[in-house]
Amino acid sequence: MHARQEEGPGTAAQVTARTHDVIVVGAGAAGMMCAATAGQRGRHVVLVDHYAKVGEKIRISGGGRCNFTNLHATHRDFLSRNPDFCRSALARYTPRDFMALVESHGIRYHEKTLGQLFCDESSRQIIDMLVAECAKGAVEWRQPCEVTRVTRDAGLFRLDATGGALVAPSLVVATGGLTVPKIGASPWAYKIAEQFGLAVVPPKPALVPLSFAPDLLARYGDLSGVSLDVEAWCGEGRFREALLFTHRGLSGPAILQVSSYWQAQGASQPIHINLLPGVDARAWLAEERRSKSSFASLLAQRLPKRFAQQWCAAHGLDKPVVQLSDRAIEEAVASLVDWQVQPSGTLGYNKAEVTLGGVDTRGLSSKTMEALAVPGLFFIGEGVDVTGHLGGFNFQWAWASGHAAGEAA
Image: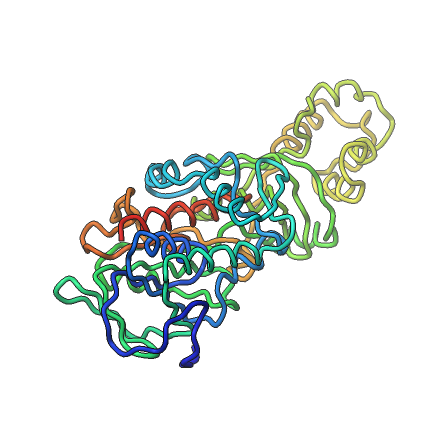
């Protein structure tokens, strides 16, 4: 990080040690929401970030149009070791609340599939909106600003930082998880949590493409770009969406969704894929039992031809249907509706949408996001062990957790 003295949007001039009411570290979605909320309550807030730009994950999200929330978001759309934790914040700041904020700024948006809301024009509009909301709360900015040390004494937090020390009774950590390191992701939230005695659920990349082991890569690696509609599941997560073959393994919404559950289970179990969702495979094959066509040709009526051919070869089904035994047909049905694939791993944080795990929520207040054992210390957003499904849910958690802390800090 570069120790520059430049000011971020709406920044006050460089200062030496002084007291604020609230220090928010992290100028992303959750941090800006928190700072704006606290500032508009009359709190004296300073927003700190080590990166030169605000809201970079917002900017690159949704293909540049920001899938800023999901109409159907509830606590059931999130993974956590403490699954009920997110209920309170999500109930008190809903998708409708954020939509009202978006509308108040004249930002036009539209719904895509499954309740996903996107800006009509640019994700930059959401960033500008949050910066404007911070301005309404007279939020100061310190950016880019490196924090070298955090201490606490007599109920006050002191941050030694570029441009001079900062002191406040409330410190909100909103520095996110480990995804997309090239735009400044860091483990800072976890380090601060551990410094103050809070547990951290080991972080892992989530909503991330999965890689094939060498045998599967040799079989399916040349199918890169082939897509099919599937139902995929692992553990309690089950999703009917698209699967996409890549040159390294599997991606697409269905796989990204399932990857979070696969990671949560320790990545030791296979993922399950129904290749013919909505089709009674047994009845369909019974009708075709005497067909002289190859099984691959038959399957290619419902699946991409190249995939059908390679899948049939892998399962010993590259022969006419009429020549297959009843047992072979039964095994084919079982494999079609439950193709079990054991990934070798993920493509890591550079390709992940979010981070699974984080600050253990059992040490936080579900109402305020405050550490139960450290008054005045708050954790919000992606750095917390709350991970949403794909489709705007993680932004909704950022807004809800940021708003909850901003109301309390």
